[in-house]
Image (tube, rainbow, N blue to C red; front, top):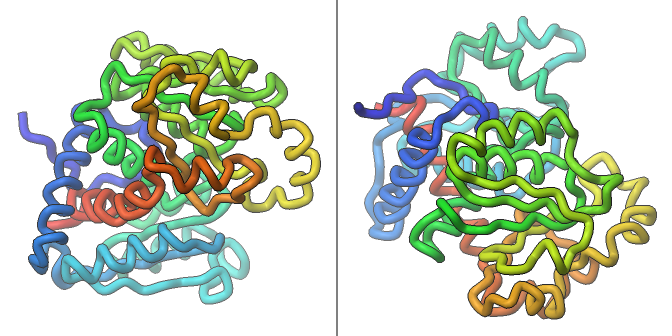
Length: 314
């Protein structure tokens, strides 16, 4: 049966099946080949896309903007001071106005409830460019990068190390469970993911053959890892916690010793960026031949383009 995602919003990978995720990755690869061949697309021709940003962004903003232009759409950036979203106007009212003017809406900000309200009331596809809870477009880029490196996802071991209750840890667990990839969260117990989410994800994993593991010993966690993933120790909005996180998470730094502890010379290193080199990862690992962080960053463009084309395109 053909995959049809037209009209769907992209808010969390919980909403997508393994077949639908595989379809988006295949489409991403096709669009990447076309981009590299210099072929101009028209799959979003005459579409207008609102790009709402409460939080600053490099990769997400640039990827959505270039993806729109590559396929013939017009992107309109709307910063937090440009519209009345949730301030002088209810979210549902803003959503209904934007939905009558735009064909699709990207939201990057704090509240998952807000992006879900936009999707509920706008009547057009809404794409989650990041919230405090989830970062699903990043996961597609991560999985495309892993797939390019190993030729598959199912059965591989991904280890996320650092703050285990942030949006990246949440989203990697969900995505890994969906595609049958083993995922270990390596973190202090005080920063383990929310128990209810772990239970939910393990139920998904039981159907795909994935294993979801929580581990406080970083060297034990990374044994036999195919990919090691980390993120900043304090997310946007948590800058006041940096000193405490450094004290707590220094043993979880991704360095050459930890990479060697995998016992696997083919282990790759991933990071959603921006990176605080010298904190969560050393310069040596970041710049090593096993680091695919810039392939991963480029793949934000191709996977975001695939999401928009699949849900809004011709």
